[in-house]
Length: 341
Ligand code: TXA
Ligand code: MG
Image (cartoon, rainbow, N blue to C red; front, side):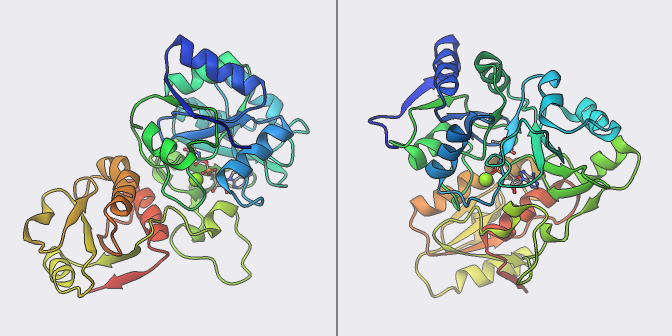
């Protein structure tokens, strides 16, 4: 499984050629997308897909997203393409939206973790689509982090987690979006399983009908409850520190932070808010600006680990509309530990 060295190459002809050759040979390669880096392999090759699970330490029951570069790669993967799916693809692809439909026979059950549906997306990052085209394969790709750690938004994050475990990382620069794609299931009535940069209201508007939001987006699963999207049941995105999400005004937050007895307490705050804090702070974007929060969230969580933080108090993002994605990730980073002041 282990490789002597992990090479990091740019997304030029040489890098893309090297990635395509490895992917065709059934190997696993980290590639950039506009959301987060992906740990890619041939989605139709059982051995290659099994390698993804091994490298990441991913639970076997958590299905992968299949990435395509062109619309004509979609039909062979699914049992059929309903009108709703075509409308969403037309409106949002290439881009950070994943669409779940009943799968075809072609897609192996390892890729979908035994489910009879398959999640597909066409990434907006040009290098991601070039790699898929050069390999001539649909690529299964979860986020390129070790399972449970924050998702990687730079090639350096991938290297930190995967050095010596995969032969190649392609560096396409920092990810524009910064949180994983929105996941919508069209197996029945449209339902949003994971919030992201494309919001439920954007989906509803395109479809001309309401899109429900899965309960698990904003709360932990109850004991014995079956998740609609298995990824939602795991503690996710978590740095080593204990993370607590604080719903309060700024003054009460600063007081809580300043009074914390644990010496390695950090604040995770919005830009400009660190002025009054007596404890060290790291920022994640601007208040009420979901795009900047999304972009910085995962890098900031990793930075807290690098600083050796033991306890982190987090300023709560907004909870609706464009902010639901960052709120959902933060809740999981905090393992649902929330204080209201
Ligand atoms: O932005 C993204 O989507 C990134 C980049 C690399 O494209 N990928 C990503 O993959 O976030 P991953 O494996 O970290 O998350 C996949 C999510 C999980 O929550 C999984 O449970 C869900 O999608 N999923 C995949 N296939 C599914 C299916 N057939 N039914 C329900 N949920 C599914
Ligand atoms: Mg992930």
